[in-house]
Length: 339
Image 1 (tube, helix red, strand yellow):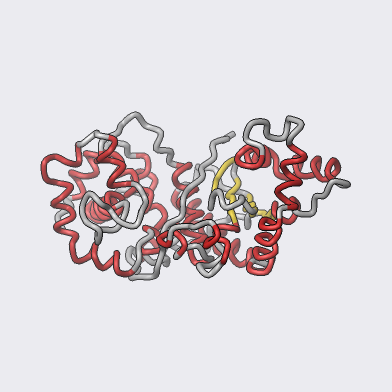
Image 2 (image 1 turned 180 degrees about the horizontal axis):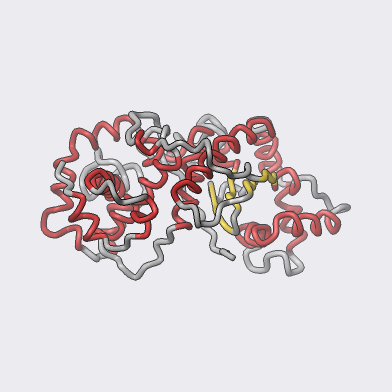
């Protein structure tokens, strides 16, 4: 049983043009049950000092392994559910004025009907995954929660986890109180839930825990991840998947040749200096190594274009074969990528 968990950051996501509609496969014959929706925030904020012991047993039974990760992740990092501070930490969280106000805001913005709508779209996403990867394990649950503004999505033990307090809209006062960077706040709303869930899922499903640290490896790896997300959400605009504003997308389109030249020159793709790799794959307002106009994580965008070219020029390759291919040089060479 998979017990890995992934907490991913959030990105700027704004609508732009959509590509790769060939990935919009027919899933009418794919059998996949809707995910079971579990709302941890409701159960947690129903706890008080008088009913704690009773509710605690129910929470552990209902949420299984994830509940321990949830508690040890930020509420009680040193002891989880197993030490004397557990009860007080949970009650401090649920009785905190700001956390109670956040929970009320979540309930108003995301009633059960809204979560069901999200889950309906997520079910189609799961069906497309089953279409492309028929032998892989499918998620069976969607767990919503509030995370104290710690993380947006996670995936573990066949459960997709959604931190609702990371999607309260850019006007929410909480983000101003936390001094959340503007480049992050712009995407903290419902439009970006599905792309973020898909990304968190794919990053765990196709784990990048390899000892290879060349820029080429990371470029192709993330290119494959974004291509897979595109396959799961074929009608979602590219900017929602990669996390760029319309202005940033325009920059990439207009400067694709020059961007590729930057990566191709001086054998930069084969660079294994961690600082260089991080400069070109880390989130932020821009990629400083190139210019303040260049979007962040630009290596991921270039990788996506390489992988698209690879799949276009090698039509016999399935999505499953692509994701299982670990030879980054092979993908680059056979992509014939020439912007």
